[in-house]
Image (cartoon, rainbow, N blue to C red; front, side):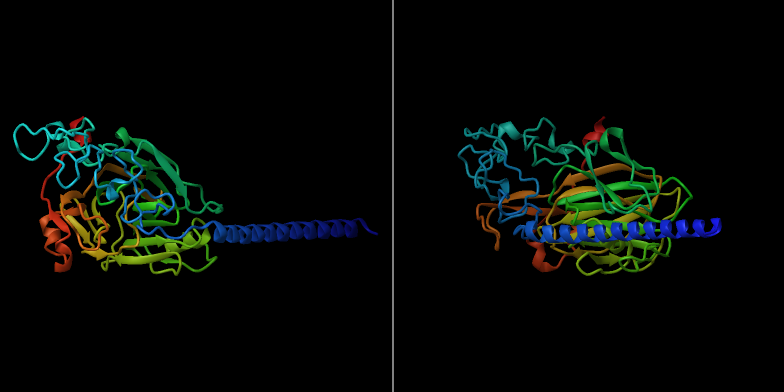
Length: 407
């Protein structure tokens, strides 16, 4: 046999071997995916009754949303379901300090607020006017110094995973890479919340997604606000073709699969993707963000009435206003930021604030009749609510300061 013929035979064998290995790897990957899906079917638990992301068998208050599982008196019953939050023997509806143990109910100035909680409702050493959660002693300031990285396309190799850095005592986040989709999620758990911040893309390179996340319960369930600069079809057409339109979008992620190619393409796509993502609102102006430009957003989420409201500004000019959106799928969770294929993003001056008010009296449809939470809203938002919801909202036009502003 000639030398050339031997070389051709060897090359053919090498090609066959490579093809065989490629097919083996593909089959193994497919088998692993099938096995994981089967495992998920057996291990996936029912949707929580209270929509707060805590499964019923672990939830200390099944009848009401309480993602933080706050239990002020450590009696095993969550605050949302506890007739006596502080365990002082005084029912909430007559207790003058519902979050602090004060059986004597001392009230020197007879203003209805006990001496021990005057100017500090939750007793956390931070006075109420700078406390971002005056009804939760575990949260008193915006803080992303401790955060969870969530990789939304863990198998994908087309891009690197995001690289996060946190500055300014937890109120600023930076992501440097042109990356696969990912989240940086703080650990504070909130129900009703106001969330605001500034984002800035510090490069003229690329035109992809910048955003943030609220009511994060796990890597399958969260809300997100995403902003794309330009129209673009995603370069990975498997498992389906995904097309992004320029402009701001608000999406509900309620994914059957969780992180992977299906969720990745569903997030990229401007539209509904069954069993993955639902598009709740899109800015009809289809205006993309501009590089080297600061944008300030304001988000209101009131799960008790299902309200989502979003506004964003460039300087004093309002770029978009979502109007009142109503969706009750998720009732509170954690906050964070999102990037998808966009490098050099800065999220700064981040501020979140709990927004609920404990009021004495019964509320139709709630299991406990001794006290309940009303959502606080500014008057202009209140005036736009349907009349059927106004009785569940307390008008609050207070301008709050925050711990960060005092440093």
